[in-house]
Image (spheres, rainbow, N blue to C red):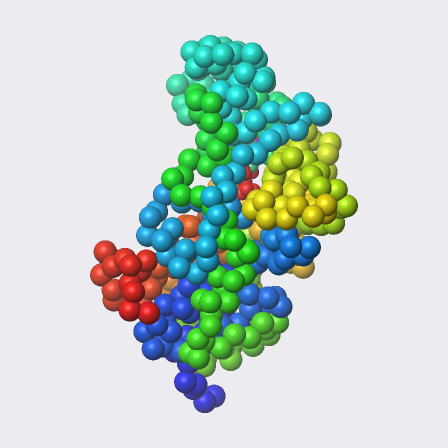
Length: 390
Ligand code: UDP
């Protein structure tokens, strides 16, 4: 087969692929970017209706401690000062998240950090003893160790088990460590210094990243329809799809968790008074409800758009949202990663699905810029955010 004039084939138009294409184009390299879906932006894709920006694949709040990536992404959009402050609804009782002095007061009436810590310690001891000197070995033990049994029962167990479709005792402890535990009165959902949402949504960022004569974008194009041809034709491939699918599941399927969204317009000014309400009991089938106008406060004309997020079992016909990074899957992933390394030196596996990692947006972007550093032999210290030549 004839070779072509592209240096890169990029599979997937999420942030990993789009940032790579943009940086490659800056260096005069041509890419063909193919995307299975009909739109760019991956799960960061947003659209606007009734003057309200809706995140099609669940709320995406950008948060990071990395100044370089914060400055970098703001070259492509103006960010507002949104700070995520989630409220939990447990059978009609409301609690502030993440777990902080407000939550402890609402749960127990404790008023000082010492009182709250004493309560947590007492519940932890009663439930787990001293764990025979070992660390927490699953999400349940980790959660109880951090915030005691009352909060675990009301705000974590039901939510977690419906979110992941398995028992909290069968989930890795690290998942719950994503949420801060604070002994101050502070409802900020994230610990990171920089936080916000692009005014007008995320899609504009991808439009700008991919707007180059050196980047051709084909949406609605499934890599697997022509995998062998693509691999033969392109000197280098940046693949951001599922790594197990790339290998035709030869070492077994990796597990993912999927989501389903129900979005509707309502003729009401203000439905829930907050951007995100988590429904933390086991019976409510959705995990959270977003009211989009509260993410940017831009629309107040008597309508609102809300979305309910339902977790669902993943299968090959559904979108994979979350990798399930337990031991069994990690072991399978390692086999694929080893083979990728040994047999496909010209294919880079990147992003949440290519690396089977529960990455946040900023982590994916940092990984993409690190790939750019390696690929173009750029010094480790090079700061893309301050690279003004373009
Ligand atoms: N979680 C919980 N209760 C909540 C919110 C989160 O138990 O009200 C747990 C749950 O196990 C979830 C994890 O914390 O999977 C991480 O939550 P995060 O909001 O970071 O998840 P994401 O936004 O990535 O879905």
